[in-house]
Length: 248
Image 1 (cartoon, rainbow, N blue to C red):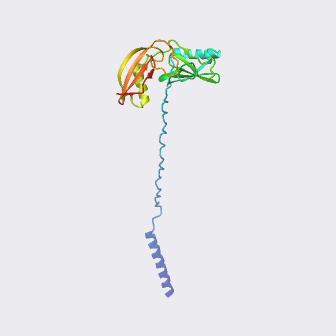
Image 2 (cartoon, rainbow, N blue to C red; image 1 turned 90 degrees about the horizontal axis):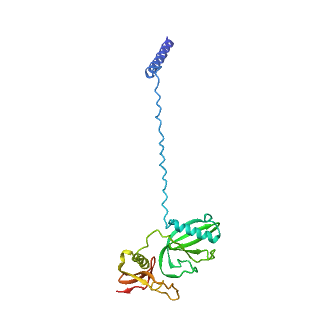
Image 3 (spheres, rainbow, N blue to C red; image 1 turned 45 degrees about the vertical axis):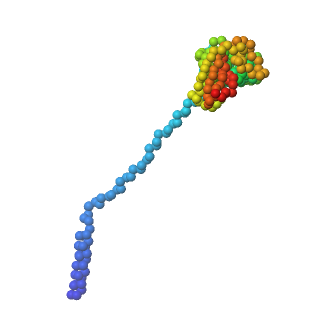
């Protein structure tokens, strides 16, 4: 009798445990939702447009020769080398300041006077050799190499100039501004006088120099700057300072 009672108690305990389990469990067939993490988009930085630097324009004093001057210089070198003009090429032409007379080409028969002018340096090539001329618009001066074929006497050109001659006072002001390192606006033109100079020295002969003994039309220009007066003598395309500046 006692054993039967113990067995009943065990069965009741088992049933109670099963009931508790059934109440706490999730019913069969109910799917648990699966939470999938939202995909994270990888932020990709857009490449910035590549900046291309615009090349700065070349600066310089290069200039185009007029047709008459270009033809003359090509023909002159071709004749000296006994070539045809199409065998000579123009390399460059640059505007620059150069001494009056010789144009900065020594031992060419031209006198180097006091004063400067704006001329053109022309570089030509024939074969592997380069040749340099200088010109003031009226003559072609062989400059380099020193042993120039056919000699280094200048060749005069007719009809090469295409621009009107500058005013003598403008040439004088530009020369004085450069000499004193001041602005042209700081220089006053006091007078401009037409003069027939007795020779090519323009009335300012230099010791040891020789000049063509011909009447040379020109101008006398008086300038004032920094309390001093300066006298320039001018030809058709050049000016010469005839004093160092006199106190007013």
